[in-house]
Length: 210
Image (cartoon, rainbow, N blue to C red; front, side, top):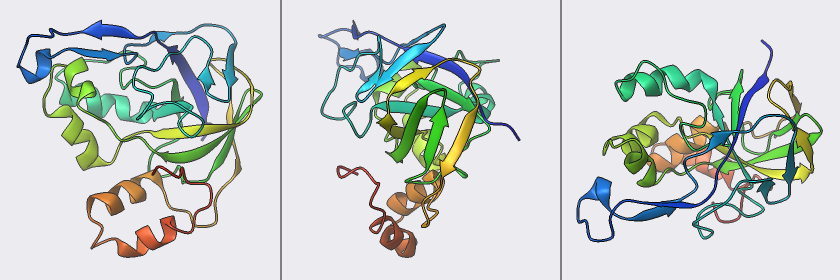
């Protein structure tokens, strides 16, 4: 099965909610979570895509979390969970929406080439409450954790350009072969999956903060 970059998204930091509100879904927040589709060739530098901003630089962005990717195969499941017929590209706040890759097949340390850009999988995404606020659904963040379908972060090994429709090639796969799904299960239940955690500890490519 071919692996393709279906869509590219970037966004600017904006504010939402009410500073005076005590309601979870209505409280004030700043984020670049709402991203728009970017057409044409987009530059990908060491800290991310041209035109993409980061509000919370403590938990997002930087060299180790420069690019956030999500599997297009999960879109149907999320639309169903949210009670919608469909959801737009970038619905999970991702920069890259990719078909043919999934949390069960993407492994920590894997190296992928998209366009002229070389990327390395650095860690799973850890969804926070803002995704629940984005979709006005308090249960959404927990559902992502429960399923393990979090998406994943890349560090940029070689800068370059990407464009929607680009083929994605797997340049190399880490010998540990710990998938994003495996890693998420292990951190959710460390006692049961201690063997996976021990494998993760040996992966040199994993983000230090993870």
